Structures are given as C-alpha cells and as structure tokens.
Image (cartoon, rainbow, N blue to C red):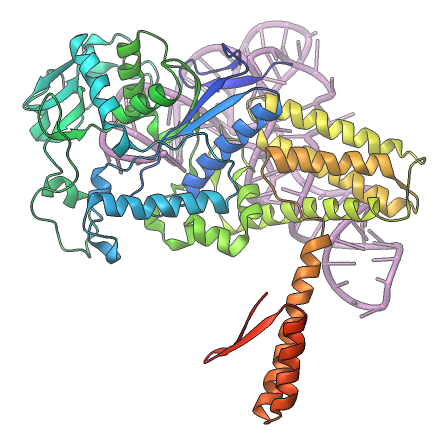
Length: 494
RNA sequence: GCCAAGGUGGCAGAGUUCGGCCUAACGCGGCGGCCUGCAGAGCCGCUCAUCGCCGGUUCAAAUCCGGCCCUUGGCUCCA
C-alpha cells in the first residue's frame, strides 16, 4: 500500500518513495523561543508528531529533527522582561525550557534531535563560506547576502517571480544588496536598538545600545541570518537530501524558499522531496498569535483541558486545511475524546470480566475492528488525514458499545482486538493516552478518602481532641501516608 | 497590487489527486423512543446539504474545464 504525501512545491499529492525506507529523514521547522508557545505552534508539533508516529507504525524507520531557534531579534527584544534575564541567551534558555515542558505535556514523541542555532554557528559559517566560494553569496559591509538571481529556481516553492517581490530587510540593508530580494546569510554586528525595539513590548523600556550574541566569522563579528540556520542544522543532523520537511504555512515565503535556495545551491542536490505545510489555526477568521492572550498558550490549554483533548482538537482538522478555534470546536474535541475513552474503558472492563469467553464470536464486532483498522490506515496513507482516522476509531467505539450493550457473553477475542486497535492506533499513532480505569480510579478514590480523613482529623483538632487527631495521623502513617501540618493546613506525602 | 491556498448541512468536518459504491462519512447540536430511582453514559430512529455563483465537458460531476464572487495566508518577525 502506498503512502501519499502532499508537496507544496509541486502543488500535488505524491506517492511517498523514500530513498531508504529504513531511514526516512524528517525535519520539522520553525520554533523561535521568544515567547510562550500557543496552540498554533502546538498544531504544527502535534501534526508532525502524528506523521512521524504513523510512518514508524507503518514500518518506516524515521529520523526526526526539530530545530530550536534561540538566536533571534525577537528574543533580544524580550531582554529584561519579567525577570527573564538581561541577555539573549538567558531569555532563550527560559523559553527553550518552557517549550520542552509544553512538548512533554502534550505527549509528543521525542524528536531524535532538537538542535539549537547557538550551538551550530560553526556549521552555519561553513555553509555560508561554501555559498560565497561557489558564487551564490557575496559579502558587503561585513554582512553576507544570498544572490537570488544566481539561483534559477528561486520562487518555485511559493510561485513568486523574483522581480515582482518586495524588498526584504530594512532600508539600511538595501543599499548593500545587488538585488532587492537578496537576503542576509550573515549580519554584521549585534542587534541594533532599532531592530530590537520594533519587536519590543511597549510596556518595557526601550533598549539602547547594541544587544544580542555575536560570533567571529571570516566576514567579521556578527550573527547568522534569519534562514540559514535551518539549512545548516538539517544538513548537519539529517543530510543534504531529506524526505519530508514540515512547517507552518506562514513560512512558505520567504523562509522555506530561502532554505531551498541556500541548501540546494550549496549541495547541488534537491533539499527536500516533500514540503508539507500545516495550515494555520485561526480564531474568528484571524490567524492565532500570542497577542490574543494567555488562554491560547499551550500550557494553559493543557492545564485546563488536558493533553488528550488538546491533541484531539489539533488532530480534528487535517493539516491541509486551516482550522478554526472556538468554544464549539473545543467542545466537540472534548466529546470526541471522551466518547473514545469511554468505549475503550468499557471494552477493557468487559474483557476483564467473567462474562468474556473464548468461544462466542460477534461477527459485527470483529468486522468493525477490521474495518476501523482499514479505514484508519487508508486515512493516514492519504496524506495523513487525521480527521478521518479519528472517525474510524469513533465507529469502532460505536461497535464496542453495541456489543457490550447487546450481549451478556462477551467476545473475548473481538474485544481484545478492539482494545488493541485503540491502543495502537489511538495511542501509539495519535498519541492519545487511554485509561482503562483500573489504576486511576483507585488512586483518585484513595486521595478522596485521605482528604476525608484529614477533614475529620482537622475537626478533632479544632475541638481539642488531639488524641483522636494524633491517632488518625498515626494510622495514616502506618498506611504509608505521612501527614505534616502547615500554616495552610495539612499536607500529605506518600 | 503581486503570489498561494480555500469556499460542502445549525456547528464542525471527511470526500475532490484516479468522475459513478456521494440517495455526501464520523462527531456535535436538535427531535422522538429504549434503558434508568434521578442524572449521566449507551443504544435505536428521525431532523438539517440544489456541495460559493454562472456556464461547459460527460451516459454520469462535490469531484474535470472556463469565468466570476468571497475568505484566509504570504509579500515585514511569525508554526
């Protein structure tokens, strides 16, 4: 069965035929650690996560690299805010940690590498040097620019014509460039106050003086340009030629266009076979951005709704479609997740009951499991259609409910297959975390009972019945629950 | 202005690559019933779509072709 994958460069879905199925190279692009991540970022992460999970499940060997851009004017622009630190590196470290935490909270499978720009400056300088030597780039005033007219295919990804493009970069740069669309590979000096302050929060005092990290290079002290880092890191940690490049739709131009130009000019090879662009998450018809407020940060969303609902939400529209975020779509995602989870739990309960037997076979259930597997796989093979894949699991949920409702002698084998389908497809591929109810209920019940005992104990203490209170504390201790009284009430450890 | 991607029921969202199994999936919502001490969950049935507009090709079009309208993204950092 053939996997199909879309490609922005050709504008079509294409058969996926990696050079080496044992080593499929995937690069997920575009993470600048200058602020808390919001749900729009999470959509890209979750979608590329599900893609790589699916490819692994389908038998490919996958190497997945996701960059962390920790050198950027927008990071400099946050210097001094909210005690983030007064250097670019300190601000970047803070948000890098926060992004890693978000990714863990979302149950993302770990990428093989999360390379950071700050640790790849030597590779970046080498790559720029190659481009200069090959005549694709030129130095001017201590900066280095890519000569767009030297690269014939420039504009092929986004369908742009070089001479119709608006100039890139600030006016000061334009004077140094041979063509207005040329873009910087290396920028002389640090970040100027003007550049930093254009991105700076109005509530913060404007920066004076030059800021940001700089590195020594053959062209003098300076910083990497805005696009070169992805080429350098992809080539370092994957190869000159990769299979899949994933990124947000807003990066098609100029970022990915420039990535192609840099990479292919340097290596002479096709950089990425498939350019997948995740469409944007929108609220009220507008692109989601940090300015819309805290509610949309990944950490808040996960805290409020849990990772499974957030993942279900972000997987409820295929990546080729833009997605709308609203109370209604969150509510739908919640219902879909809970419906799946309940069916999973019912199947797990039924299979573990004495009513589950080896002999009775419910053909309807068994057919439904096979159908769900087939539809799920077909959906994912057809360009990672996650919405249709979830729908296949929901139909399985209906079949499970019908079986459990409709008989007192459960089909052990059929239920076992259903549970396995939920766990492998919903769990391993979609990254949803099902709970069979066995452990969790016991834990939360225990917590509730402990709280109850603590309430009683507190009443005894207030009434001065300390013998009774101490007795309760001792007996909890004997059960492995230690009680410590604080100014804010009792806390427990166990 | 230039480039690109989209417009499917009350909502959301598959299907469009390779025209017919689309009398348009799955889910949410609404209505009725079953079950139930109540509620929830679940089950069954029903409800809501001339697939943006106009024209064309075809035995057959949501799917192909042409024109138009609208929306969104990019052209400045952006997933």
